[in-house]
Image 1 (spheres, helix red, strand yellow):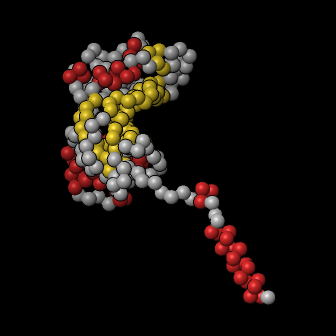
Image 2: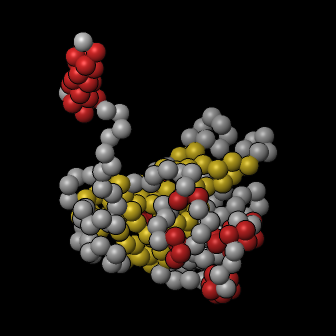
Length: 242
């Protein structure tokens, strides 16, 4: 009798486990993915490169001085003669398991303008995040793709953007009589009461299967102080006007 009961219980457990509906399993199998590494073609701070070459420790990399040097790793727009300027970039996608192929890379630009509100508080207005370039002929896995961005392209994206500087009235950013932009300049450098315009460049990777990969997990790779050349993946690049 005991053996029969044991066999019956074993059979019941086997049937319960064997008939489990995997579609109800909350722990889904990992899907393949891709990531990207974006970089400026030009490097403007040679002392920063020397610091990288010296292989600083993780503790040193976390200091404010290191993070401020990282900003100078970027290229930037000059204050004048912007009609003849451009910033050159390069980007490559990486598939670690070679299961996906990227068929298109969309490049996004977000423009941020700082100002002081009527109460004397510093403010930063985001004018939006828009596609500035699309790379439809994409190089192979781990190979570089190049593109450029000009001040005029940024202006054309955001020329109709408005900000409520006085908290009530919409004013076009590029036609603000209270804060006229210098002749020959679409973008402004730092000035009294405001820092320089900030341009943030991000990307989205479209694969041949239709999957799209954008910025992920802001608490990890996006805030990693490790230089892009060492991290081999990043989420954005930032530049300003100097």
